[in-house]
Length: 303
Length: 55
Image (cartoon, rainbow over the protein chains, first blue to last red):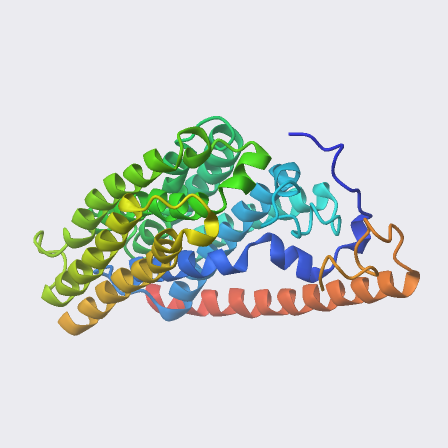
């Protein structure tokens, strides 16, 4: 990590909107939704105020992890078009403010979670923040093309945290939901990295398309999509969800696999021609919302 | 606010004028005040909820 290339900014010049931008609010929506789904499908009901606080803590924890990620990767962000306008590379905030904000928000979210719900949920929240910052951001991201595979686990924690907030323990269903997001993350990010490959190459991030090429990446996308689809449908035959969920998850997984096959067969080399890759990236977001939404709807229907 | 705005981007304008700094300080103070107020309400609500759950 280098700091000399970064513009300096007076601590006082940062606007509150820059602190908000540090938390990556757009990414947070998926984290909040999957965390809420984990909480709603739990077999134990939770007081609405405590449930709201649990989801708030998951959101704040995700925001803290994002802020610490931006603090560490400010030099990298400055090299990529997609991230160059973030508060730190654009020089609108000093790095120390981002670090203090991230650590403060992380501690606040974990302590509040413990006070409002239970120690297990707070512990998993702390693990997820530490995993994202230490394992993914600092250790793996710049060292291995498998960065997104192991790092994806960090984003898979929210449904487990939501479930733990309601029940105080971890069961088979949240573990399956964790596995679903864990297996969904590589195809999702590799589809993106195929059409922004030049950005990652310029920044020296060893994403799979940069290190192993587009053909290998496309094969890996399909290879991960297959177990992902199996895990998505698994709650139904295991008796953890009803037929409504099974049918919706199965249908969405089939569409996901169909697009993944299109990506596998694609030979496009220019980003403008990568229509299947862009379609998979866009659909993957809808897919996760759809599967988790179906699970919640299924539980409500059964109730 | 965007990086293209020359008034707000220290790369293009390393010293925002005093009025701009005051505006940002005021904005941050207002947001912090609102957040602290919401936090107090949240802690109160959590306390009531915990009491009703444990009853």
